[in-house]
Amino acid sequence: MNSVIPRLAAPSPEASGAGTRPAAGVWAVRAADPSLEAVAETVRALLAPHLPRVTAADPSGAPRAIVLVHEEIPHAPVPLGLAVADAEHYRIRVDATGITCRAGTAAGVFRAATTAIQLITTGADLTDREVADGPRHAWRGLLVDPARGFVTAEELRRVVDVAALYKLNVLHLHLSDNEGWRLELPGLPELTAAGDGRFYTVQEYRDLQAYATARFVTLVPEIDLPGHCGALRAAFPGLPEAPMAEEDGGIVELLGNFMTLTPPVDLEDDGTARLVERIIEQVCALTDGGFVHVGADEAVGMCHRNYAAAVARLRETVRKFGKQPIAWQEASRTGVEPGDVVQYWLDGFERGDGGSDGDDNEGTMAALGLSPETADRLRAYFAPVAEDLARIVRGGGRVLLSPRTSVYLDRPYAASSVPEEQRDTTANLGLAAYPGRPLADLAAWDPAALGIPDDQVAGIEAALWGETIDGIDDLTMLLLPRLPAVAEAAWSGGPAPWDDYRGRLARHGRLWSERGLAYLAAREIDWQAGDG
Ligand code: TNX
Image (cartoon, rainbow, N blue to C red):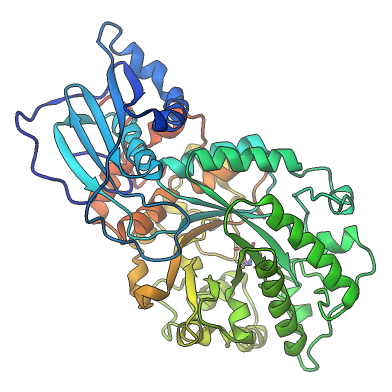
């Protein structure tokens, strides 16, 4: 029995002379191969916050070691989706001398080491055995939204650490929106000068990227256009407004009651197109990873032709500067080319019955207390959503899965999850439009249930939007304890039985505490504080 999340794939039979011993004690991290010394250094840093406790428990013990070994893993299955990293399969062996991590790549060795760190820090007994493990999905991401809920670059590193500990490998940064522009770009000082002074300098972005890369996490920056462009407008006053649809049924006014809407920019305007090209060029130049996200969500009320031109232009520009563009699902309505990557988020519409828990558009509208007429207008506006997924699949696109009913972590907690003493700190966390859902529901999410052909799945991404976030404690409070369930769906391919998952999760609260991360001590879980 271990408490590792995501759960380990097939264990081999227990090693001969099987024994168990407490994980507490003195631990060293050693690279058996000099090429793995940099990984060993990163693993030491990741383990460090947990060491005082571990060391104190056994001051006399000879150090056991996490040993990092380069060794090819034969016959490793190929994961689904877009490769953002080298192969990540590994083998891990536990015995009296410590934990040996073997893989054919540095990425695989690092993933193995995160398993080792969890074995040590979640306080389980270590049982002699050997396990082969690897990801079901190649792309396992987390979106954070400093455009709304700003956190510093230093705080983002802590988010990278926790993502890496759960074997996520993408940090998607929503860097621009109506509320702010958060990335300094060479030659474009207006962008950051117009805001509230909170942004990442070029150097901070580069350093964050290097920090993430050392943890085998790829940054995917998002510049959201042609809607969500208020910060761009503030920086460059007077950008022409995109032409709107002749008949929009008052949707801009209506949705404007629930969200901040700014007139979308017009990418058929030459000056705007040139400006956007300079922005995308700089973002691509700063970014080491192969992907740049161009948004394209919620361009409410825009005339279709102009929106289609914007999407085409944005994609073309990203390609011109050597990256693969990603766009939100609305972009699929302008057509899907084979290989286009589209991020799917608006689920809950395709289910004719509205879902068993009311957690769909109907549920949202009920939560907002809308009149029947208003609800009808919203239904009409959202109607095209029901066709999006099928259209992407038909067109040969690839779907990055972020269905909001399951992996949006800006959802409030269910009242039944929140312990009395955390009522106040969580009262305003999460968007009120989303009904709270018990942890067990979220942990039951099975990405395969969407029925997308294997070769058209791009990956899985949790999304933590920032409207209700004020600082890192708010951010991690929404993230934990929910993130590990998404990580398990992404790495292991589907949910575990709730009791099994719940038992493992119970040992992770201590891991978060030792890292100084605020989390919800959800009432569904029997949090284990002691050395088990
Ligand atoms: C919709 S998800 C948005 C975001 C909001 C989010 C809140 C998406 C592509 N757009 O701008 O923050 O809902 O959950």
